[in-house]
Image (cartoon, rainbow, N blue to C red; front, side, top):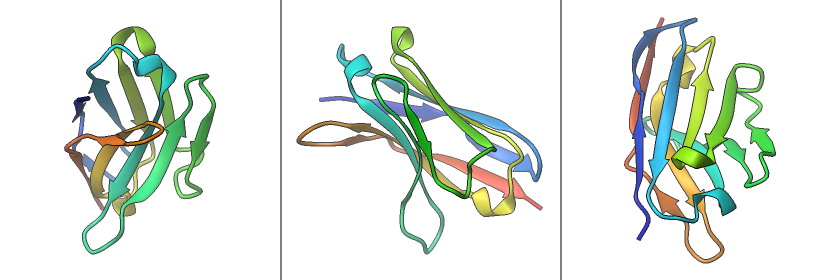
Length: 115
């Protein structure tokens, strides 16, 4: 069983920054793709950013140029640096570890951006 624990969410004004962290349990962190998703009230969960085991990244168009995903395999941690935040970025942000059979999710961290 893999446990993912997110942190770093909070309340920030528009234009501000936050850095989310997700720590994963287990010894195979480095070989799995990791991703951040978000879900706003009344909306479907959507992919924000992903990072492969080799460090290749991909982003939703809505966050390109503002968000950066990174990973530190020595700490079993994936990060999401969020800059130039907008009110529409308000959501619960979830970390996901992608595996061949089953994906693991964290419990989420709330990000609220005030206008």
